[in-house]
Image (tube, rainbow, N blue to C red; front, side, top):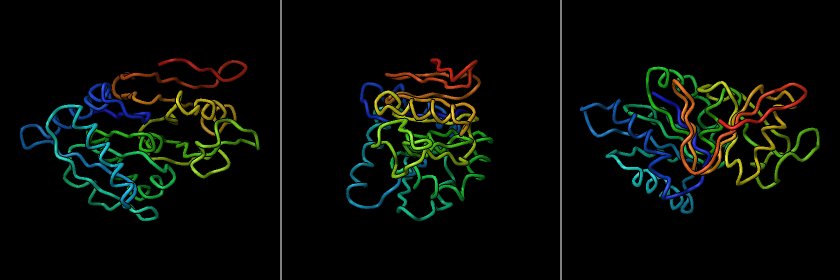
Length: 236
């Protein structure tokens, strides 16, 4: 099974490409026992959040394939319940405030790693993709006082902040890359030694990490590494 890292964004036309592979893997795990049961972990419980959460339901519906959603809505500042990982054929962690997702799911990181190593498909959307990394970029817009990306992408953090993530992939992940200008943040983070390697994923685009790295959808994924005399950026 694979790890699917989505850079955020909503596109009806790309829904099948972006989410279809994940649902296929969930179905394969469920085999003939039942309709695949997908755990959908989302942050927020107020009316606006509930309305926004319907975008995930719609996108997965457009992606095709029968599935059952087990939706866990987590109030900010509270831990994600263990039940979100029980009796499911796939785990989908959504987008929103990345530091809040990180803090909420942190007590379950070891269990998520164990389940994914055992074959549970994982899809991270925006924040869910960022925290999947071994070293997770959770926000910020300055390094050593220097602006490295637009202020509105800061996740209410001043300094670019890189912390221990779930550890599903060995590279850091930044999202909304071309649309929000966050490629610059990842380049600066690698340059500053905050993380050794990163991948920036565009909106309506998925990077699937399995035996190979595969990019699908409307945009690009770019690898950021330390090169001779500086930082190297290359398309995956």
